[in-house]
Amino acid sequence: MSDHPLILGIETSCDETGVGLVRGCELLGDEVASSVDQHARFGGVVPEVASRAHLEAMTPTVQRALDSAGVKLSDVDAIAVTAGPGLAGALLVGVSAAKAYAMALDKPLYGVNHLVGHVAVDQLEHGPLPKPAVALLVSGGHTSLLLVNDLATDVVSLGDTVDDAAGEAYDKVARLLDLPYPGGPPIDRAARTGNARGIRFPRGKWGDGTYDFSFSGLKTAVARHVEDAERAGQPLVVADIAAAFQESVVDVLTRKAVDACVEHGVSTLVISGGVAANSALRALAEERCREAGIELRVPRPRLCTDNGAMIAALGAEVVAAGLPASTLELGTDTSLPVESPLAV
Amino acid sequence: MLLLAFDTATPAVTAAIGESSADGAFTLRASASSVDARRHGELLGPTIRRLTEEAGVGLGDLDGVAVGIGPGPYTGLRVGLATAHALSDALGVPCHGVTTLDALAFATGRTEPFVAMTDARRKEVFWARYDDHLTRVGEVRVDRPAEVDTASLPLVGHGADMYADVLGDAAAAPEPLHPDAAAMVELALLRLHRGEELPEPNPLYLRRPDAVAPGAPKKVRQWVK
Image (cartoon, rainbow over all chains, first blue to last red; front, side, top):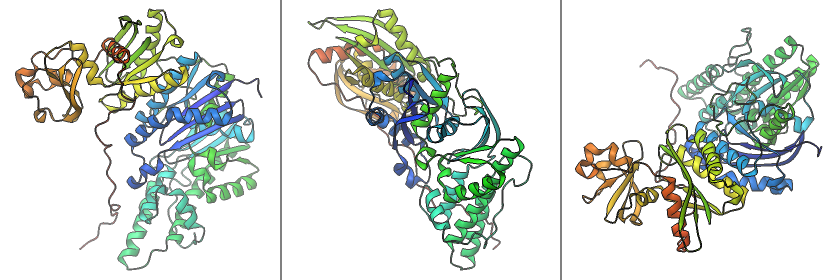
């Protein structure tokens, strides 16, 4: 793989400062500094806290990634950075640093799309992605279903959440159940011993003929259930509530993802983003993909959450496609559409 | 010594390349400033590139980088700092901090005491007192304009201009309003030549992030009493 250019990827869209080094589909280095502990007591990411942490972590994380990959900055052939979507102040730290590295090293700069990066990262684990593929991105900030014809040039949005992201619903339900932030892991753990059939929570936008999602009604239904139990003086069966809530989320996610594959005649489904680490989502997706004859690809949890390797992986695709580099005037775009793998 | 300096802690994006000889004589090689509070991220990189072309030097020729560490509105401030940290890392040269108000004060050339002020947003100013253009008295602070202890000294900077109605006659001649990297690079080279310590290139925020821990979740049921 050594004939492929060495791409340095920088990611600062939310609360992880990620730096990755990639050649083609080969992962060489991947270091992340997270500020998640600083946000825990606020129950969600505080943008200013995240931005301050990015500035402190940026160059040390670059150095750690270079060390772990056993390469030098002067070996880098191109720099890729998340230009959006994400938090404005957080994105700006990464983009500013990336421009400076590009200028100092006299190498091309590519501002790329965070969401498409979540799909591209799977290539580091499972090799080149068959074309086309369907991708389900589920995280604290995003819930999107994509038709990926080409990672660098042709990504189509099939559906999105109309309100809360799936991971956000996990965080909010965790608060209702007095579980810690972030809510995904504790709910997943609690659900393992719970009975998912005891309570029936709604499935948002189930069978509505779109590939959109909705989780805010589900969160309210859990809140109602909790309040009703408290008012009736009944103890909360956290495991059952967690299991029923989780069942409702993963049922809709996997159903719509598999339906999208079938409708578009696609035989590969990628699930990525922080929520892809969820054991119930993985289990149900595996079952339904097997039944439908679809190959399921889920990167290992470390690559599913935000990291710099995913940005380097997309950068490698963009470079290989021969797309023009970004200029030094590259801005950040907090709502960069997924149809733009490369920001202009 | 060839030094690149820039500051993004105020509405201005300002950058300069300066040089000091062995005897400390200063030469400004190139400088540029623009005022656009919402485009620091877009403006700084192209400005640096233009300056190097104008000065006929490469980034690899630099002996160091100096950056304004504020205080200043945080998002813009971080553009300069992130850029400086990465340039210094990639070029393998030192990165020095310069307090933004000190650069503003230096540019006044004043020999009598005065107060420098910049906009801190939220109806507050960042400010500091100076005995002269080179000598700050005490720490940099953030306060409401009416609460600043100006000691009836003349006031300079955009903060003084913005709140002239509250600050009165002392704010009658507030120029220069914004820091200029041409002065910043000269100040940094002067301090380095004298063997003085420059601040670490870390941001002066002066305020904690606005964030409050959430209370109990809102009730979703409306109970009939």
